[in-house]
Length: 184
Image 1 (cartoon, rainbow, N blue to C red):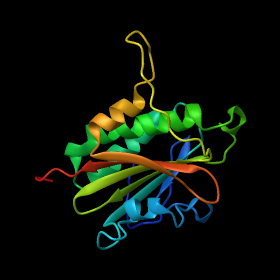
Image 2 (cartoon, rainbow, N blue to C red; image 1 turned 90 degrees about the horizontal axis):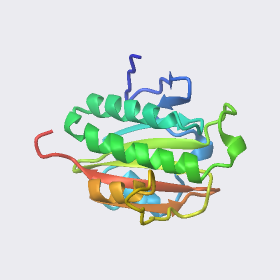
Image 3 (tube, helix red, strand yellow; image 1 turned 135 degrees about the vertical axis):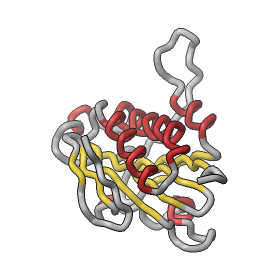
Image 4 (spheres, one colour; image 1 turned 90 degrees about the vertical axis):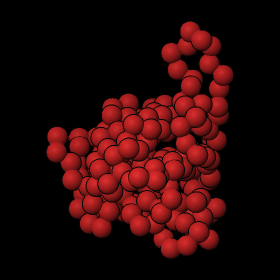
């Protein structure tokens, strides 16, 4: 699959499981919460230098789609060194949203209940996932034999910071900030 991502274009990209574009749809906007300060850079200077978003239909196949979207976006932003960490962080954020924030009937209905947004700032990149649940993300302590339960620990280890906020009119946004490498 060839994917072209542009933060300055409104062209949509369809990948069988979602639609990727340069802006969140109006009904899923990030809204006036403290998440706006982190994502949009309010209080930190100008608005982000780049923005890209991807609507996801709520299936487990969304994690690989999100990784491809991250790689294409960071390539477009000339930040290939961030791809491995950002792809893993986003994969965990999306998997958590799909597994823990959606009702079973929400997946595969053609709607995009999960949105992935990427925000390019001078010193960092913020990866944010919005879902319809207001339940907070819950870090777990996974048994050494467990197959899952380490997502938020991985996000914490790979990112400079992560947090979440309620996103009016419903749902939440969970985001992680990754520092941009000094060399590009």
